Length: 483
RNA sequence: GGUCCCAUCGUCUAGUGGCCUAGGACAUCACCCUCUCAAGGUGGAGGCACGGGUUCGAAUCCCGUUGGGACUGCCA
Image 1 (cartoon, rainbow, N blue to C red):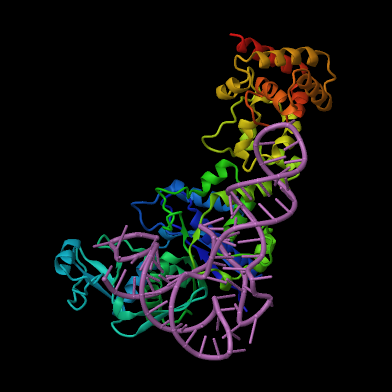
Image 2: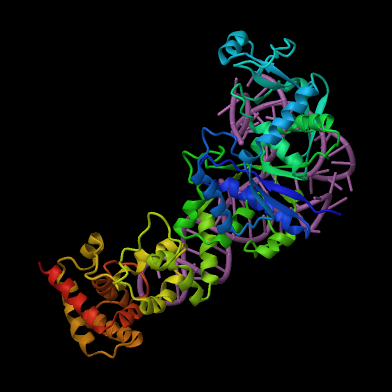
């Protein structure tokens, strides 16, 4: 028994959409679940107006990032024009196609108040030949019903009378999506067409074309089974839009989401693993995923939940893995790949790898994405420290108490044993002497040394920063305060 | 307008006629922990759109209503 042959067929007209990523994943899962499954990538680049080569690279690198490996391809439709020409020739021979010279204006004029959508069949029986401005239309059956067998939704019926004679090749000669897609699916012996729900209404047309192709090609190729995935929507419950919504998979990679977390989250959109555990390994996904279990209703792409999940994955990393994997955001100069438009805020000469390894465990449990690391630990590498002004004003400002506290801290820290525990103790005592609880006493010190009121644990940070740099910053803050 | 799809907490979902007093996760609230911020722990609030059937019994099946969405291109 041969395994399923599935394909992911994106068009390179923009960033890699998260909805596309999910389609790719679900296809991949179906292929991987069966030892004989085959996953194919086909770039649908017949629209030469809108395609750009960089988007093709984007698709491939994003899939690579997600770990969706290919069994065949990537194929490109732009390499298959001969096949499409053959499809067209055969379909013409079989009487399935006709030439049409109607312009958009013609159609609009004829339509008038008539609400009936689609092409009116004006040229269907005019028996036009090929001309300078003739498109090729498919002659759809006027009667009967086409039933789309959808694994997720069950049988969906379309009355053939409601399907108009759609264009298969432009007057320029360029083939269109419907024909190219079906020709390739049929030639590639695709068994499962898994894609977004927006394609459901294309399915009957494609089935008609497939059958027509069978009719004129001698050998019949079994129709594929369809699976239309629920749409990914935004808060307004509209299909995720390239213009308005954060849909670029690349941007999630740049922000420092882990591919395994991203894949896990994507899998949760329209599907769920058995049991109560949502964090599941890729192997579990492969094991449990079934198209039949995919839900029917649209899913909101919830960045908050994605982020939470990513935090969980980050915390599951070993400290070494954390250091290694965060490298593009921490020391991009040493990395082959680095996020675009994201600088850590320090230079190679300022950065101290050994220090970072020690600091890393302090931030690993406090960040949800790698992009959050740098702002949190910049004070370890950059002198003088960059102050968050409101924080400075609030904790130190011109307050005599704050100034006294810093002054005492300088004295105590000059003598203190330089360990987190000892500094902790010393700060408690400093606070007590001034009638301050630790919570209050640590704030000016934290601000003086780190520039902010929130950050990694203070005393561990001081220990790692070292006595000299700590004292220097306390003095600088003092000077700054009395100005 | 036409065709088609969809409908369980705010969100993602579990649920396939009795195990449902509807379970989990995110978000949210409270408390605990605590040097800040997180993380973690405990607890709370919160849902079967509505109306009819079918059935001893319905979140689950059927019909209708309402609501949302997709498509309706010589784009994919």
